[in-house]
Length: 145
Ligand SMILES: CC(C)(COP(=O)(O)OP(=O)(O)OC[C@H]1O[C@@H](n2cnc3c(N)ncnc32)[C@H](O)[C@@H]1OP(=O)(O)O)[C@@H](O)C(=O)NCCC(=O)NCCS
Image (cartoon, rainbow, N blue to C red; front, side, top):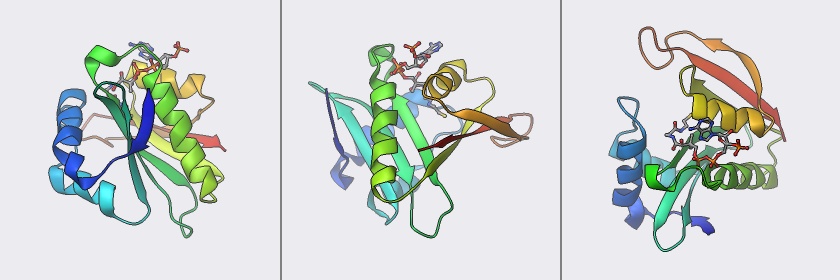
């Protein structure tokens, strides 16, 4: 498996991953494009014969922490450690740019993602009520890098 930067030409593929991994919370195309091209964002892909998953981080010097904006693995490739590898890559990328902590939000019902973060030493900091819409709370998690 390789992990490499995403290019804007891969926007349709990233949109496909987004559509198959997220429901109403999925990002629209213009936001996904900004996450590939805008300064401060890095979007990267895990691929083998084909693209299997993607992740996005956001960090600029003026931010107090880096943020894991998105991480997703296509259903047929799950359970093989791909998200763990993408998360490790996300941490290495922002650490290289000077970040000393990573923050993220995750739905309180997303057991797979919560386990992923807990197993990678993220600490639960609190609950954000209605983060994903009415009645849809998120955990706020953080890791010192
Ligand atoms: C969450 C997600 C990214 C995990 O991807 P994955 O490649 O299957 O995860 P990995 O194989 O790297 O597993 C890493 C850890 O995640 C946890 N995990 C993954 N799938 C799980 C599941 N179905 N149930 C419980 N824990 C799970 C495990 O703790 C695992 O660690 P372990 O092997 O040490 O037990 C994937 O399920 C996904 O894309 N979901 C939809 C998008 C999403 O919810 N993204 C997170 C938004 S905050």
